[in-house]
Length: 349
Image 1 (tube, rainbow, N blue to C red):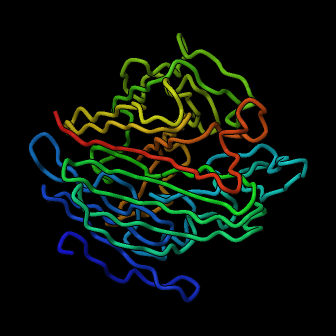
Image 2 (cartoon, one colour; image 1 turned 90 degrees about the horizontal axis):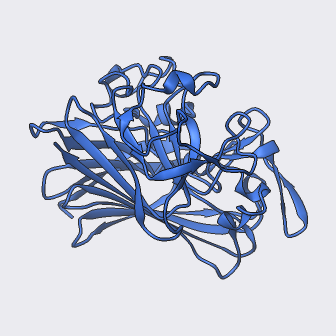
């Protein structure tokens, strides 16, 4: 497989971790690691054809182990937050780890972002691909049922990053995985993302107190959350509030959940790079890198200051299991198959 190279990336708890380098026909480069089934690098061109690595990350495995920024990772079993770190399922109460104040975040203390996944490299007509697999045992982080999960990355020859997630369980449980890359289209070391222009295919969002949804929807028209037309991320950021100030909210995506449809468009005027995101999830979490504070040293010695990158995490609504109208978004029963697809298209203008 001339378009896929594998190299050692170190060990975690005696398990070997690999790094995969994928190159498409256009010369674009994607790097993936079996630790957390994560993206570590993605090099795409600007309007002059110059390549830059547009994802935040680390140069070595130990840094991924030491930090909980979720850079590029596959998060699960359930992405985002569960209020009060507890839920009811088929008449039984389950308590999970409180990892974000009193709430449960991204699967717990050892979520799937901290697992070593099995990996199968694949050369396909569409482009080089790696499928990562993980078996989460019954009781893992407090969740019932054994879950067999996979995340498959394909770097297409059309400069797309295709991510396909799948899972099955041997009993009723919760599953909704998400991809957690921090994007900076100017390049991971280019400064903050406040000048990036974002539009979202949404008319409503799920407010919370402050960020964990309480079960209702609100229109975004006339609010700082209105991204129906593109605008610089920094324009209304100070109006959002929060501690620290910034976006960390879920928008309900227009269209039918389960169908691949437009979600977001992100553009960097300085370089001309454009990211267009399609997905089949009910919602998308836009996070503006509020908690980055310069304490993390990333690739090439770059210190990632506040808003050095942003996340667009397609997902079920946060805290869905505790909202009767949303609960079916995250419940997975024996015999059912969970699927989640994201398509990232990269262009320049």
